[in-house]
Length: 172
Image (tube, rainbow, N blue to C red; front, side):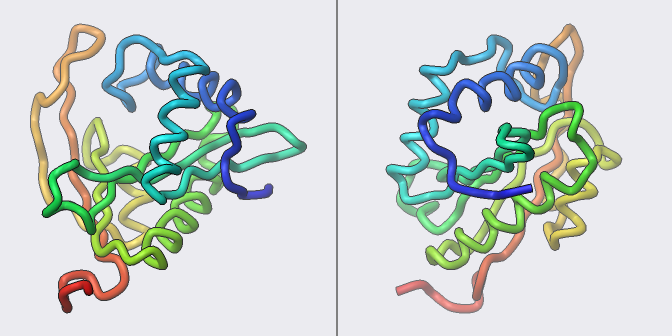
């Protein structure tokens, strides 16, 4: 496996991975899968914000991706990011998400961010919750019935990881 910065040429593969999660799972609250052009625009927005969008490749094929985006646009949130990870369904639970997330954490820490938020749909037993916990994220909130998809209410677990000095100091 190789982890690298995503390139515009990866948009089609990323869109294909994400389409599964939009159309088949509650991992994403989107209900219509974005096309390659929309994914490319999202990637550009993340890069333009100076944040990482990474892909994992195996045998020359993109099999997973992860990124961080600004948590919110208001200036008081400028040191907080939200992460996302999506792994091709046939490559799930093989360590790709963990490896990508570690790299995203390292890059956001190096860039001076102080907090990372993960908003995970499902329940406390969700694999993503366990993976985030193993990387040091702490559960900070449980938001019942936050989303409605596939005719069912979906809960969200909010998790948080301090980056670098976290809240021990004020950034310059």
